[in-house]
Length: 52
Image (tube, rainbow, N blue to C red; front, side, top):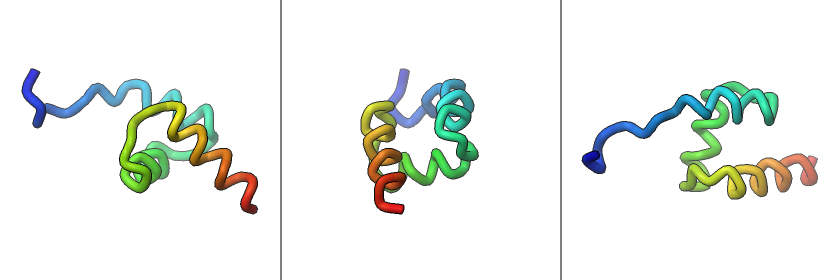
């Protein structure tokens, strides 16, 4: 697989549902934190929830 080929995003719908956000919002989070790691996204989401 070449580096410029798109990654499989089939899990994003599941992850978005888990956090009760849209796929677009999830992609925005991924872009903002610069990672597709579930744990890093989870930490970001938790930090956002505790700030509000």
